[in-house]
Image 1 (cartoon, rainbow, N blue to C red):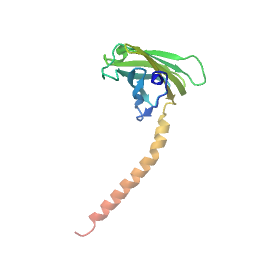
Image 2: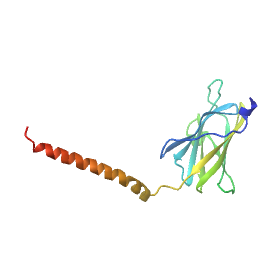
Image 3: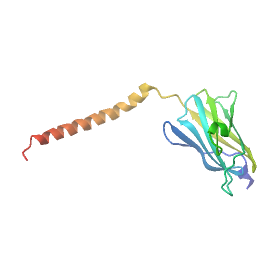
Image 4: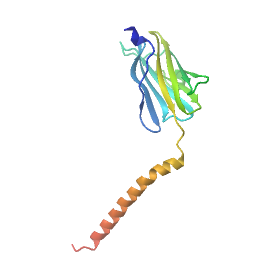
Amino acid sequence: MFALWGPRAAHAENLGPGGSRIVFGDAAVGPYTLFVTSSPSPASPGPITYVVRVTDPVTGAMIRDAEIRFTLRPPGGGAPVEGAATHADAGNQVDYAAHIELETEGSWSGTLHLRGPLGEGQVDFVQQVTAQRQLSTIILVGIPFAVVLGVFVAMWVVRGSGRKGAPA
């Protein structure tokens, strides 16, 4: 039973470009249940926003007086980056948000530390930071789709013009 209260690794899910990534989806962390997202997704060098919702797993009540800190360690070592999640950054009294600047690409090792009225908990996660997409990359990826669309439009036009000349 005490194994559930210690550090543990979490699974993350990517919800697509420009959206949010679920870092923890209703995960048990210490005596709490956490729902954590990060954005933008995919993450690129610059500010990353983590939004955290903390609940009591027994009552389902939102925990609004917790202290939440993120620690992220860069790939290849170096000084860790830390940030606190607060209601002020989230814009409401239910969620907590932290805005953390991650300057280099790679796999950052993260830890979320939580202290509140039910006790303490922490959980480890990985934050992937990739190069920002260039306009040229988006254009190159879009060319095959444009060609296929052009072929379908041409076939539709040719097929439609052939019917006009046919007797009714």
